[in-house]
Image 1: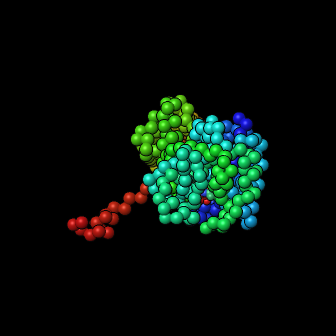
Image 2: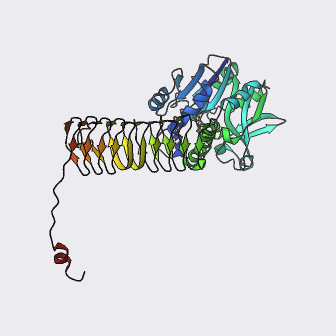
Image 3: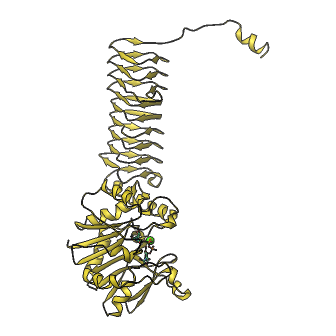
Length: 432
Ligand code: UD1
Ligand code: CA
C-alpha cells in the first residue's frame, strides 16, 4: 500500500518510573514497540520509527525482529514533543499515518480504517469514563476543532471525556505546511503534533474524528497500564492458539509469550508459563511447569518441571521437580527431582530420581554425554566432563567422577555399610 507509517518512540515515558525507555517495556515477552511495528509492516514497506531517548537500545531491540525499518533521530533538545518528533521525518508516500509507540494493542485492521476516510486529516478519538492523562478533543458537527492537553486544559475542558487516542492520518503536504509553524507556548514547553489539527481547522481543512475502541488504542503510560495491556495481549494469543487446535486448560492461568509456537496436538495444563522462542509439538505440558527458549516434541513435561533455555526434548518424559538446562534429551525418562545441565542423553536411557549433573566447577561449565539404554540409578552425581557409552548401569548413590566410561559395565561407588550394634540405646538411653 502507498502509505508511510510513522511510529513515535523518542519519549522518555517518565510516568513509567523506570530507568528503561517506555517503549522497551515488555508485553508478552516482547518490547511494546515491537507490536505496533509488526502491525505497520503488515500494511506497508515504509515504516519510520522516531527515536531519541535511549535510541541505541531501542534500535538494537527492534533490529532483532525487523530488517526494513527507517530510524529517524528527533532533535529533542531543541524540538521536544510529538510535533518535534515529526520534524525530521521524510515519508516516501503522500499518505502518512502517525502512531504513538506506546500503543501495543493496535492491529492492522484498525489502522486500515484511517486510510478509508477521505477527510484531510483523520484522527482517533475514544469516549472514556476516565479521561485522565489524555488530550481532550473538542468536536463540533462531527469535525474536530482542536485538542487540548490535560496539562493545558481548563477545568471545564477537563470534563470533556472524548480523548485523543494518538493515531492520525495526514497528507504529507499538510504536515509540511503546519509542522514548521508549531510553537511551544504551552505548559510542557513542547511542540505538540496535536496543534497541527487546530491550525489546519482554521484554514478550513476537514478533520474527521474516527471513533475507536480502547482495547486496541490504549496508551501505555504506567506500570498499571502495562499490566492491563498484557492481560489483553495474552488473551488474544491464547485465543489464537485455541483457534488452531491447542488445548489450554483454564486458559486465563496460562502465560504464553509472543515467540512461542505450537504444532500438532498439544495440551497445556493450568498455571504453565511458556517463554521466549519455545516450540511445543505434539506434547503435553503439565500443571505449573515453566519452559523458556526450548523445543519439546512428542514429549510430556511436568507437573512442576523447569526447562531452561536451549533445552531440546524429543520422545521424552520429564517429571516433577526436574530442571533441564541447555541439554538434548532424546527418548529419555527423567521422572523426578533431577538437574540435567549441559547434557546430551540418548534413547532408552532412564535417569533415576535425584540425579545431578555437576556441570560447573565454579569457573567453567562442562558437558555430560550419556549414550543409549543407560540406567542411571537414583542419587547419582555426574561430575562433568563425563562421557558414558551405550548399555551401562550406574548404581544408585554413585558419584561418577570426570572421565570416559566404556560400554557394558556397571559403575558403582559406595562406601560399604557399617553396622554398630547397640548404638541406638547407647546414644538415646534406655526406654526411648
Ligand atoms: C499524546 C497526545 C495526547 C493523546 C495521547 C494518547 C500530544 C501532544 N499529545 O500525549 O493528546 O491523548 O498521546 O496516548 O501529542 N514522543 C516522541 N518524542 C517526544 C515526545 C513523545 O517521540 O518528544 C513519543 C513517545 O515515545 C510516545 C508518543 O510519542 O510513544 C506519545 O508520547 P507521550 O509522552 O506518551 O504523549 P502523551 O502525553 O500521552
Ligand atoms: Ca501516551
